[in-house]
Length: 206
Image (cartoon, one colour):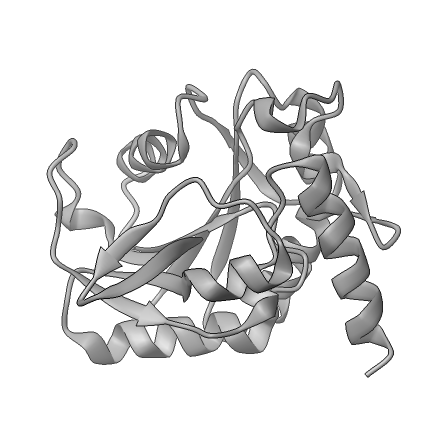
């Protein structure tokens, strides 16, 4: 199965209220997006990496090209709309969409997600983390879903069959629940950035 990773890096980052583009915020001395790109390069099951940017993230696009990654400019509407645009524009088949703000992601976990997708026999798989993990870390959560009595938060990682995407029509999906602080560690606010920085430093010492 050939998998294309679509790194979603076109958001405005309005919740951070900073002039810098969100994917270019520094954590542990590196840009946020660099962690994701490095993890994808280290994944055995990812065949191609495309960085989806927008008019709001021109510096991110420039960095991605400098690092020799393919770049596609999307409308910059939102995660799902931009992902759908990119999948249709490039006529992608099996796609992993992943947020550019997951500095603790690893190639090993990316391979685990793709393996789970290969085994689920559904057109889509969404990675979610229990709400209590975010609360324990003090991270902000904007989207909470209640599924079978559990409060879950999308981690910003999905795998899907691009051929099954038709407009805003929903496709059947498998929910992959992961109780892992590393997967919950994304950045939506300045406080999140500080928490993730501390978490990164703590994990380095373990």
